[in-house]
Image (tube, rainbow, N blue to C red; front, side):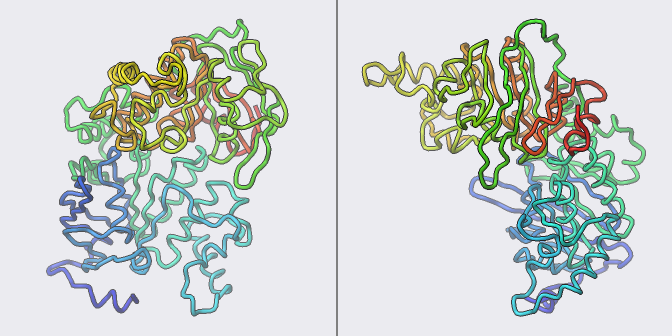
Amino acid sequence: MTNTDLMSQEKTVVGAEPATVPAASVRHVTKRFPGVLANDDISLDFKAGEIHVLLGENGAGKSTLIGILAGMQQPDEGEILIDGRAVRIGSPRQSLDLGIGTVFQHVLLVPSLTVIENLMLGGSWWRKLARPAALARFRELSALLGITLDPDALIGKLSLGEQQQVEIMRALWRGEKILILDEPTSMLTPQGVKDLGDVMRRLREKGVALILITHKLAEAYELGDRISVLRLGRVVGAIPPEERRALSEQQMTDRVIAMMFGTVGGAAASEKEILVGRGHGHRHKVDRDRPPRLQIAHAATAAERGACPLLNVSFELWPGEVLGIAGIDGNGQKHLAEMLAGQRALTAGSITLDGKDISAASVPARRQAGIRYVTDERLGEGTVGTFSVATNLLLKEIGTAPFWRRGLTDWGRIHDHARDRIRHHDIRTPSEKTPIGKLSGGNIQKVLLARELGQDASVVVFNKPTYGLDLQNTRLAHERIRESALAGLGTIVISTDLDELLALSDRIAVMYQGRLAGVVENGPQAELAVGKLMTGTAAA
């Protein structure tokens, strides 16, 4: 559909004044999915020259609303207005044609192509690629955003922050009217977050309407002009610019939390800490005069396409310690987790657990020795979706006593064990016989934690333990991690969320291009030190 076709569908809103017409509006938008009312009669305005922050827990309806503006979903009821005119956005291309650019949480660029080649993708197939015109637009946007990039640099060679700058360029390529940013800081270094804030303010000054989706209240306070809160698919409150400017950060935090949870008291203190992104370590003393529980010496893994291998990684982990592993995703964290679990073989180096070399031990042997692994792939690697909750709770024990004897399955004992784990870990499931694939992500994670945090564990590796979880389940996962450390387990938490690592860890090790760039003691200056290590510009 062409721009002319789109214009033919538009209708002017009667009585609208050009000077006050929002860049985009949604009016009484409702979107239903089977069994879910994702958006329930939502009306919002997004104004030019303003950063409008959307806040809300997972499932509040933010992603569905953004999908509608991006042309990936169509509303069942209501309408969308661009510059005061009602339009139908039937596809992502139509969204772009209307001046709406969207930067999603994960980079969607082609790593084997250059910056300018990525920006030229998506043009009309019958038109010859016009590189001179594309370079002129590239220079124009570079000046607008205040950034310096080589148009001929391969995307795969750029830092994640630089790749995100290209994503913003791509979103603005056809016009500078409306920019949607979905959790844009979730995988950036602290410096990358600062740079992104500078870019957003520069675009605001140029009259662009920005829509920022985030779960961090500190970012909302720092960057937002207007804040809207969604809960269970509805808009439950808003803070307009004049009120936002008059509020302190604490006052804004209290107001937003009350809206999100629908109560005067709002969230628990631990949930507030997660939202605000504050806190350093779980603060109990780790006795490093004792021998370490786990020693990794000069570990290396085999290179393979699309994944960063380990290169000469060494560190130690003590009983009761939480060691955070930070780094931009793709710097060897997955190889590290799988190497510790026994799923990936060492090509060099060694692993010592409580004084015993387990470098060549298999996955079952390492599990028997006390190493537990909570994978980031909950369905598929971590669980079997068609198997029951009860079976998944024993997935790594199948065939062993006391649940299996002489080839026979003791279902009574298996179901008794499952009911006990369900009660202890507050797993919300119709029964222990329910297929685990029917549970929410938070409850699947509870099953993984119940399975891995057994009495015979000595080291637990958590890989992105709260990715995709709502606030309550994030808090519960954090509680389990702290409990495992207090029980004397050596605990490794791999996460791309630096706030999470600052809240949980005693020390934070940073992965960069497959190597351990350094280890930082947690404390007030840890964020700055970790940020430098994440970019490869410093060594501890």
